[in-house]
Amino acid sequence: MRRPFLVLTRRITRPFSAEFLPPWREVRRTLRTQAGAQTESDALAVEEPLEIRVRGTPVAVFMRTPGRERDLIAGFLASESIIEHSEDLLAVEPCRDAYQGQPEPHIWNAALADGVAFDPRPRRFGTVGSSCGLCGVQSLDDLEKKIPEIPKWKMPESLQVSVLLQTFEAMQSRQTLFQKTAAVHAAALWSETDGLLDLAEDVGRHNAVDKVLGACLRGGLYPLEVPRALLVSGRISFEIMQKAAMAGIALVAGISAPTSLAVDIARKTGMTLFGMVRDQRLNQYSG
Image (cartoon, rainbow, N blue to C red; front, side, top):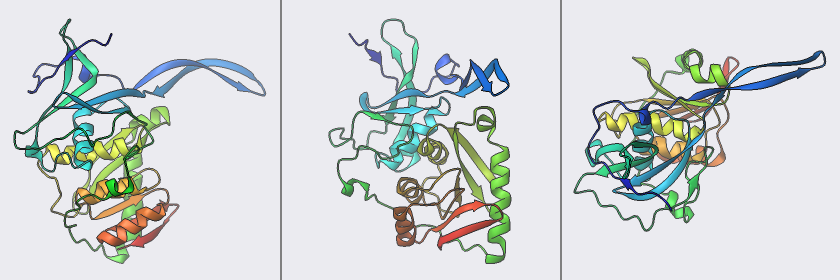
């Protein structure tokens, strides 16, 4: 029988284990070559479930890399149009075991402001894989979200190639979890004046994006009213573009190529989109 959990509606001030789960762990592996075999330690990225509850109601289960759960949940709720501004979210806290009183690191609850309407019935349920963003929506119409006005940002053509290539080099140098495990994606927020503002890593591409955009929401900067760029370490899918558009992101760039729907939404919203930012070149698809 599943144990009940207490739902917390205020932030816990003292540190506890639910907020400090390691993002990687060591295992023993055998390296085999033509010359023979050698046993040594290897660092693997942690992939674990995270159940999200809103006002105590289960909404989704993510497969994610532990860390920045509040940002991840805030970003997810914003992309699902459950919340729109930082004041809509009162707290994001782990539930507690009703019998032992210990925080549960894999079950978190979001407390919404009193005036925020939430109907769990149309929401999807089940497990959201780490490679999926909006998997499980009930229809294609569910993907049509309310998109704010995108801040205008026209980077001079003379700067596009050199600036973006240098920015991705700086981004890669800060991907410490990838350097250790070679098994996570990264997303970063970038400003033309201040450089890299934030970077998050996760086994899920969309999780990394949600962590970065969720931090903006929790900081009272959502949707963005000043030009910002979202940089991603993999392909650029429709879901990533949709999350970026809802956050007011003006420019999206990725190391890999975009999908056809990603290009469509960029052109529809007026966002600038770059793909294949590597090897001293890039492709511009819109903007």
